Length: 241
Image (tube, rainbow, N blue to C red; front, top):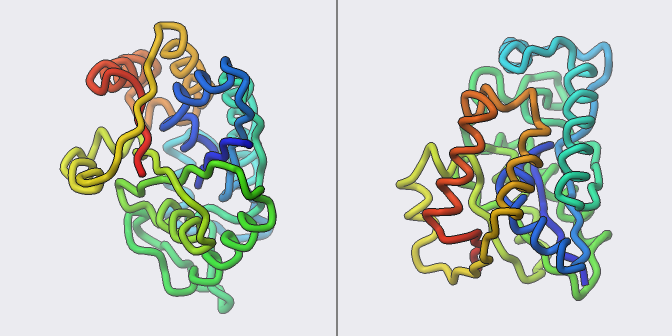
């Protein structure tokens, strides 16, 4: 039996579940993180203005440089929480285009998935099913924040008919508390206790994503404070069913 955390991007699982993962690994439970939108765009793919803007926020230039840097960060984060990472080569929404070359997300990333991405849901569902064991425990994003890549991964996971647990998407949970309350209302809560060591491991795992800390939290210390406050408010870590 493995715990499989579905991570739309190269950070989502550790951001949202690093404390739980560290606790499970300390208990000897096999844990894998399946990263979906970790493909590297072709060198000659023209970047949209949105992609260039996102790269600038991360202080990275080309798509290749960006993905290579983020893959290195994710490998370090997975090492720190002691999980086994797997990487699938689907593209992040900021790089995706329709067959005719249309940029699917030209201006905004917090929008419903483009109709052209329905095929992506199918492909991810097929990949999950092909790699899943019957006794695996599958954990998907709740999709707080309505990021299309999170929505696509959740839809794919729900399509295969395997029992699911859900995690609250961090940092979107912090940014959208009303949506968090609405989406978790009526769900069964599975609590995981927190220790100082577990919290520290979670913080160090997230700290590996150095390109993301300023954009997501305002810096490393603010990230550590946010995770500590979250664990304290919830008296540990939580998953939902």
